[in-house]
Every structure is written in structure tokens, then in C-alpha cells.
Image 1 (tube, helix red, strand yellow):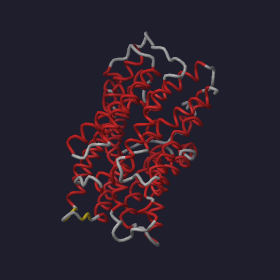
Image 2 (image 1 turned 90 degrees about the horizontal axis):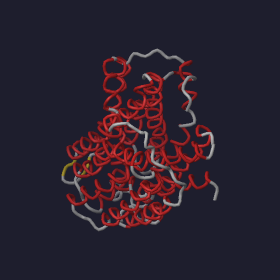
Image 3 (image 1 turned 90 degrees about the vertical axis):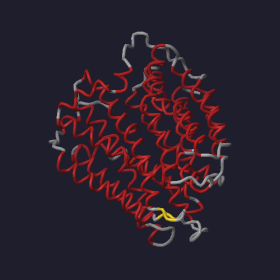
Length: 413
């Protein structure tokens, strides 16, 4: 098996084990375990908790103490144990802590998989910029395939999804040990503070960067809303539309969002060059508004189903345009000595603090609009939509940035 194929397999299954449970989890917690909105939101809050510090700690271990591919293997093997146990848990307190334990192991593997891929490609004299993207796109495909597998096996409301994840996590862990060695970098001297991006807080002295990072966290709040509530929302139509495609195959319907991602990511260079980063980020915020608003007026049949499908399609713009254009903005606008730290800070604010606040606050909103076990989903989604719209309006008014097309040519990605 050639090296590019081996890394394709690695990236495919890295996100396959994520997709096998992430999207169906909200519906499982609400339908099978009957958790409250706050409890469901708190479980998704663990994604933010795990993303705040563990990737930096794991990065230091991989740099100084243990080969990256071996560390990747161990994290997936131990993670398989947590996921196997999670399938047997029914109470909220235990579920929360076991899920947190699993994510403390899993979340760092996303960055570690990228690092392993970069190192091996570089060692084999490949052009990383040219070769890695086609490899990485198989990660998204793996996520989609896992969604379909859980859907077609009818395990979205079954603990079997966790046993399924555990099995593939174990296999992926073992497979990781077969990869070429990625030796420790003994000269690496980055501190935990630097890896977390905390030394980049000096950039807050620049008003433009301060505003950007603040909105990064505020927009990061919406990133987990879809993951947490889309499947639970579609499950709510079970009584009225039990035989509808949206209910029987909710994972497949939601997977249109990930398919949309793979399309919109190809359009980013054009939009960035033509309209600039501020406009692209505004497009992202307005796409989030449409995502939630269309959910608010959607239903499993007729025109309502069309609204749901369009909502899935605009997700690609909402997700990609913010994450990638935001990262590129940081790359262009920060001094080289702070660039890595600034990227770390961007991730900390969006996938860490933003996801943390988003998970918990969305649960509070869902519970607020729940009466006698019945959730007013239209109002819930419209509240989320209003938040995204207000964010877009304020961002347009306070973020001052002049589009410089030539600056994009200076950054090689």
C-alpha cells in the first residue's frame, strides 16, 4: 500500500469514528435516555472543554516524549474503551463524565492526524500543499459514510452506535502503529501557554484583531448548535410524520450538510479574492441565520422538507466560510512571531470557549421553550437565527477592514 493511500485510510477513519455518533447523539439523548435540554447541551459542552487544553498537551507529548503515530494509536485504543463503556450508561452524571473522558482522548487526535500526515508526506518528498487536500477530503467522506451507516443500520436510537465507534476506534488505533515513524522533535521549545495561543493575547492591543477574536468566540457559539439539536429536532416529528424520510433517515438528511461542506470549500478562493475576508465572514453569519431560520419553518413533508434540504445546503457556506477565512485572516494579519499562537487562540476561542458556551446556553434556551415535555422548536430555531442575524449586523458595523486581494497571494496554503 503506497503512502498516500495509507494516509487516506488514516484520515477517512479519523473522522469516521467521529461521525458514527456525533450527529445522532442529540436525538439519542433526548429520545432514548430522555435527558433535558440543559443536560443535552451540557453533554455537547464537553467538546469545548476537551478542545481547550488537551490538543496543546498532546502536542507537547508528541514533540518531546512519544512518536506521534504511536501516541495517536494509544489515544484511539484508550478511547475505544471509553466508548464501549458509554454504550452501557443511562444516567446523566455518568454519561457526562465518560463522554468528557472520551473527548479528552479523541479531540487531540484531529490535529495529531494532520501532523502525522504532514510529517510523513514531507519525509517522502511530497508537495504537502498539493497532495494533502485530496487526502484530507476523505476525512469528510468518512464522516458522511459513518452517518449513513448508523442511519441504514437503524442505530441512531441505539447504544450500538457506541459499540460500533469503539470497534473502529480500536482498529484505527492498531492501524496507527503500522504507519511510518514520526520521531519526536527534541528541539521543540513551545510552552503550553504558547500552544494554547495565550501569548497571542498581545494582539488584542490592535482594535481590529480584538474585534475579530471577540466575534470568533461569539460565532463559535453557533458551531455546536446544529450538532447538538438537528437530530433531536427531526426526531420530534416522529408522532406526526413517522414514515417520512426526514424522520426515518434523519442522519442521511443531515449528511447533506457535510456534502455541502466539500463543495463550498472549493469556492472559498474565488469568494475571498473577489469580495474579501470581511464579506466572506458576513456571508457565513448570514448563512447561519438561514440555517436556523429554515429549520424554524421546516417540516418533514412538502415545502417544509424543501426548507430543511436548503438549510442543509447553506450549512456548507456557514461552516467553511467562517473557519477557513478566519484562519486565513489570522495568517495574513499577524506578525510571523505570533502566527502559530494566533492560530491557537483562534481555535481556542471558537472550538473551545465558543463551543463551551454554545453547548450549555443552547440547552437553557431549549428548556426555556419546553412545556410539559413538548418543545416549541419553531421558536427555538428562530431564537438561534435571531442571534446569528444580530451578530452579522453588529459585525458589519464594527469590524473595519479594507480588502487587499494582493495579500492573499502572499500566503501559501
